[in-house]
Length: 417
Image (cartoon, rainbow, N blue to C red; front, top):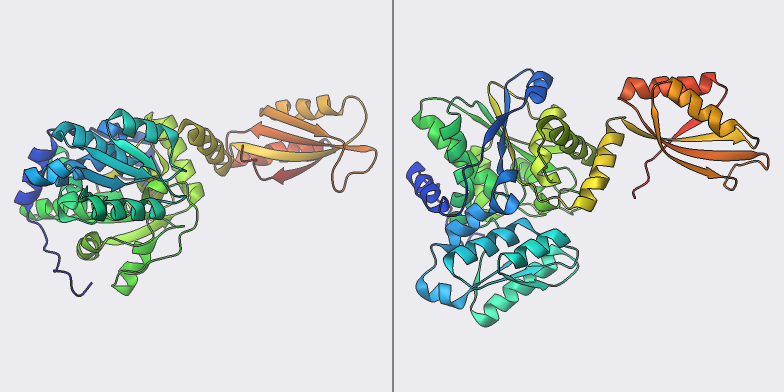
């Protein structure tokens, strides 16, 4: 790190030039008001909808800005990248727009819709390795062998400038914003937005707060901000795979530690609940990484002060994952509950149980009936019930109704199917 040149903070004109450049391929995404979140946090909350961007995420901005600055000779060599999804699509679309051949390495576990979309934009997709790290190494090795230009997902100043155009747009659309909440993975988006927004605010003679958000299972910036140096963490699984980066990028980190006011974390339950709220209340399909800013507002770690804008950084959600996340979000919000009820093995007990639940105004979604299991007497059966409720208080009412009827309900963890 000491042998590398210092990171120079870009000026506002560089972001403005990047925005003019990026608008050749990226749209200006809307900023939508959220009545639900505004009432929840007691401040005006708006959503910057990069989930509606071309390719479904902000990544095309940084990829295009970097690739458009390649020389003719570099463009002839082609570009190569590694990604689990959003950066892949950004590179593929940017390459198509610029007439450059693109190869993208993706791990075998990458979302099938993201793989298909990357191919549809014209890039060659190479599936390699079980993890992003393995795909990344393979891509970098090929770049060394072939001379293809490696396009990093976040650790390059031209990428940061491109991603920072999100911040420029926010300040153009809502110059009176006081707080911006933004996801942090490798740090390209957060660094660009923070610098661009603070430079613009300074020019307007005002101050602005920037809060970064990470998934608590992979949160190297939360640690690095405290230590003041790049710190790699041991990553544990998270549904927010788009920001699951174990070590900060050098360039973004140098900018973030000076321009972001606070970095907070959100749990898997927080993320699932935020996705559900965005679906139900704002009619926005947002992937887990794209929902962490809203999750941080909902769990109270990101304090909204004045007009607050949360960036929805991406919407590339695998339908099968969406199904699981919705169920998990309902469960985390106490709106989808699994009960286990022990019953005597005689006619009418299932009907009685259903009648009690219906009388408590809940809805049985699924029933599993078994005569076999640990702790079951020969004369007993076990009912596993999946029940819809309206929230925590309603769930308690259902439990009390079952107990009042002489039944023995036991709460179970939801099945991950």
